[in-house]
Amino acid sequence: MSDQVAAVVREHAPFVWRALCHLGVPERQVADASQEVFVAVFRNLHRFEGRSSMKTWLFGICRNIAARHARSRARAREALAPGPLPEMAVAESQSRELARREVSSRLEHALQKLPEGTRMVFVLYEIESLPMAEVAAAVGCNESTAYSRLYVARDSVRKQLLRVGLLTPGQALEEVLP
Amino acid sequence: MSEDLRWADDPSQPPSLREAITHARSAGPSARELEALIASVHAAATEPSSLRPSRVPGPRALFALTALMAVGVFLYTMGVEQDRSHDPPSVPAVASPLRPEDRQPPLEIPANPPPPAASPEGAPAQRPTAPRPGPARRPTPPRAEQSVLEEAKLLRAAKQALAAAPSVAAAQLELHRKHYPNGGLVEEREALAIEIAWHRGKHSEARLLNQRFRARYPESAYLRRLDLLLRGGLTER
Image (tube, rainbow over all chains, first blue to last red; front, side, top):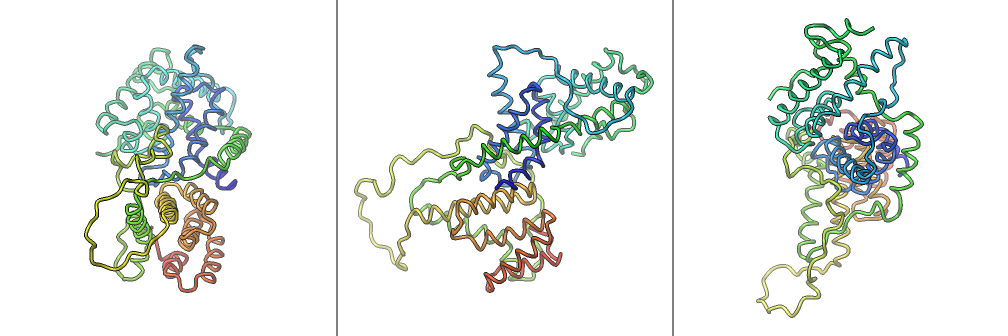
């Protein structure tokens, strides 16, 4: 069984990790939350029949685990600002990397300001590249509503990036970055 | 409804914004964090009580009928019926469109349905009914029926998960092997193991398993299908 556990975790851990981050789980709790997700996966393995995508199923579990974590830290009132993004795979020149991290950080801040349902549509569609039908199923709305949320999210993200000076109307982002 | 062009693929979006999205897609645990996660999940998830499939309570007759249906559906999905004819494949390889009732249950769904109020055996005296003509029914222990039903459910889940998540299908099969090492559907499990290995790209392993399967079950109805699969002539699931 250990090989099977390793295979499943290796294959799906990045998605689970990102989903938990975007669902507001603090970075220092993501590892624990990921463990809870996969334990729930293996305890409910017999329930997954492949009729929906694995990511849709996993996202439902992530959402429940994230909600549980949110409840448990409700009294602690942690700062809402998201931490730095998890380890990145690509290393580039320092200035280029800094510029990219700046945009990534701003993007993450912009996403955190969105309502969860809207944010998750953006995340699942733009970042996880799920088909919109699966996005709608994962967040529990119909496709039209999901598209509406996507457009709201895009508009909000654009405005946030404009506000902090990372985007100017009609100007490519490359032009305003060092 | 056609899909909207994603920002990362839209050349009209600023390059750094597209890059930020692409960058976000590659985020995840570090190698060290991943190994720690695997170890902790393995320790927690393989406790004896944690991987046991849920029991399905119900009257004996319902069990017998459902078990037969489950086995029938399982055999059908394994392609036995297709192998008996030369009809073109009719089982789609991809998952069907999502419907609300198809969604996988979240955590809140209890693993074990509540037990019935009263078992048929424990029920008060039943009203006498006229005997019905027909072949005599062979009494089957409820536990055995239940076991076969659970086995079939697990194997069917693995079969259906094969397209969406082969690694999960393999884990489900392992779960069956753990709980039903000498169950009533071992032949089906071993045939499915070959399919899963093949679809996970482990072709040498699939061929080896197929040789063992052929030696163990020389009269199996799955042999033709498995041969087709391993020759690359079977694309449907």
